[in-house]
Length: 366
Ligand code: ADP
Ligand code: GN1
Ligand code: MG
Image 1 (tube, rainbow, N blue to C red):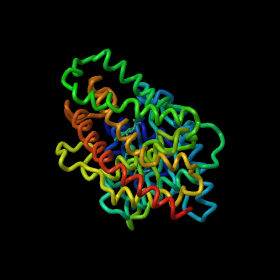
Image 2 (cartoon, rainbow, N blue to C red; image 1 turned 90 degrees about the horizontal axis):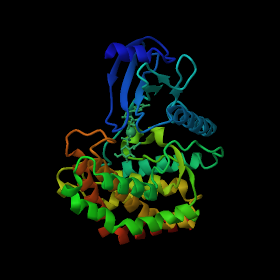
Image 3 (cartoon, rainbow, N blue to C red; image 1 turned 120 degrees about the vertical axis):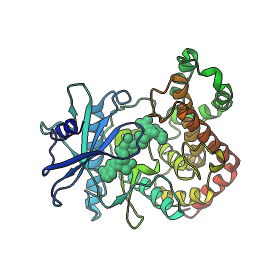
């Protein structure tokens, strides 16, 4: 395998001699490796086999990423930052393409490894949450004047109407006969269907605008420096034109959880209001100037929306026979479903406080 990985890495414009290629990270979608080069003067690199079942147009995805990172780099240079540490740098293949397609039809891509950084799996302190909020806020703010349309490489990604279509089809098929075991969990989804569609209708009508957004803002998709300051937003496979509420909501789902995303012990799982407040402060410090009143009004709701969507996606994948997310055991998607549902319930119980905090934080800028 390593021989093959080396050969694949060798297809890219790597600066210096390749020492070793080894697995890295905990992503659920792609396979990630680090390419270590021989000399300290050469950077290391990230090599990824992109998941072609999920990403059906990888050339367009890579093109989106390069257009977005070029835009970010110009902004970073203009404010005196380091464009190779504060934004991802895609390394093209030797033939100039942004990816390499191997003999089995698998797509590979490379970017520079940003060293001396930390990817956290959990936000343990309000300071870290503030920095994460600031990071995504800056990302959105720097992209606010990105005018050209991005290719929609994941139609319907955070669109709950589209997710319900998949959901209804999956339940009707029940391909591995699991639906009967999860009648209770299915009820959790159905009870909230109308509430979620009412919110999504605002996006469909244009009452909530569309912007360039990240769409996968969990904490391990941000690199922090050793001092705990946000450095760079990574995992740009899902950059899309969508509502910025998806980014805020998805971050809240990830940062505020006192347990793990797949915690088997539901007693560990709840929403930490202090982390919610700190992330909101960081996020608004960068976004208050451009958020519309409607976006501001729905910030707290978006946390429930994306957490609900994640319950649906994990449960749907369980019913479907685990075709989307990587799983470590046959029950893994069900464990994830229950843990995310516990988080959703905790948000519902604290919803009035979440709304109050957002309102108070916004008033600072009024
Ligand atoms: P996935 O799509 O599978 O989640 P990611 O792009 O998020 O893959 O990468 C997985 C992990 O690899 C990240 O959480 C981070 O720890 C690490 N990583 C990815 N890109 C870089 C980079 N450019 N520099 C340093 N670490 C990185
Ligand atoms: C996936 O790629 P990764 O592991 O950062 C998923 C997200 C989910 C997340 C749940 C393209 O993110 O949408 O919210 O898992 N990415 C894709 O942890 O589906
Ligand atoms: Mg990731």
